[in-house]
Length: 168
Image 1: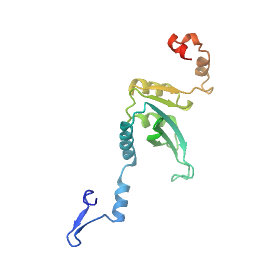
Image 2: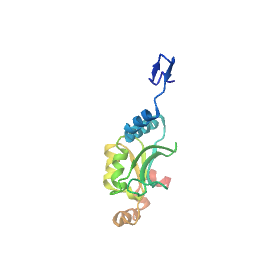
Image 3: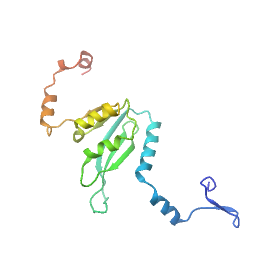
Image 4: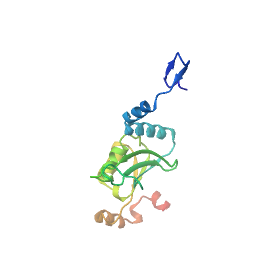
């Protein structure tokens, strides 16, 4: 295994020598965690047959950043596979809304359905998913967006096509 990992061979000891702890630590510290996360997430997504992707944010219990505030992550996960394929730490001076697009940008979402809570019910998020990523979406609507809420509330069954009405 050490040979396959490219470790050096010691003629004196007649064996491959693993790197020291400081070498492993320095190597891991030099790795861009977001790049590794993107690569692993894209690979996991390519292996799955899931067509539904959920976006949700969570504050990590017991975690603190350098500013002693709780770490908050926005994640994209495959619903059927129950697997996170992308995550971003939400900037302390921002919120999940601004992290939505950068979280999903590297993912192939064509033909998938993206679900998200009411916070992400934004015109730009819908446009990004449909036009840029060729995906569909299901967003929640709450009363904090009163005009949109009232418009949706007033939709009648006859406003839908017959094929949709028959499924309701």
